[in-house]
Image (cartoon, rainbow, N blue to C red; front, side, top):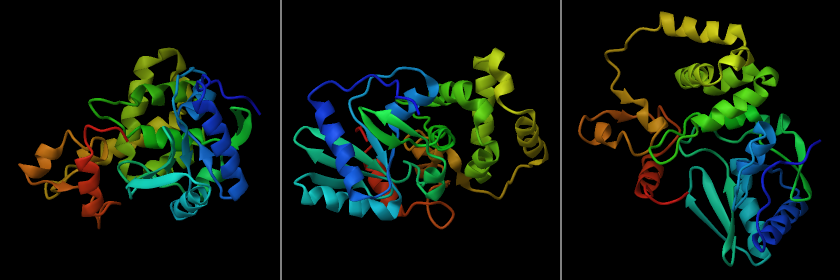
Length: 265
């Protein structure tokens, strides 16, 4: 078990987060620490951070919020499809149970493969690198692109990744994974062996046998950017790949997420 290499949160916020982690442990509700602490732990790239991201299963999020409310904290759920917040004064903690595009829902597998480490003096479990890569690969906004994070994670953890599980996570969206792996090979020519040959062969095979679907009027761009493909939906009348029944989000959830463009999560 190692200590996270994320740079320490500056006081007085540190006391808030240490206390929040201990209170979470007291609830006996399973949770994982993600964000900068998990990224720095796996990639060995130090990262300044002003907050902590906590990951829980969707059904456990209300229980977490209720437990903290009983202790005098304030809570809100600004984005019902993936994110809640716990506040005390000027400090807050994100409680995450999915991803902005609704795809990367936290489930039992996150916990089954979560390592333990020391974060701010508290022994906690981290989000697994496979699930971090899965969720980060889809973040391709103009103002935020997590491709470099994916590359750093692949550089550090590629040889030990559970590649079958990673392929399973991407499912029908395997092209997103393939694009990240191609970019990784460009960024780190000396680390191309970190991606097993059979993975690239399988993804290239899928690409080779795939054919255009001229009857498909769905735009999948919204899966990687909530803003940059709005024109396609509004003017070119593509259907939104995120929307039920084909996607994971309701129309109301998409509208809430779209209205928040330009604000922080």
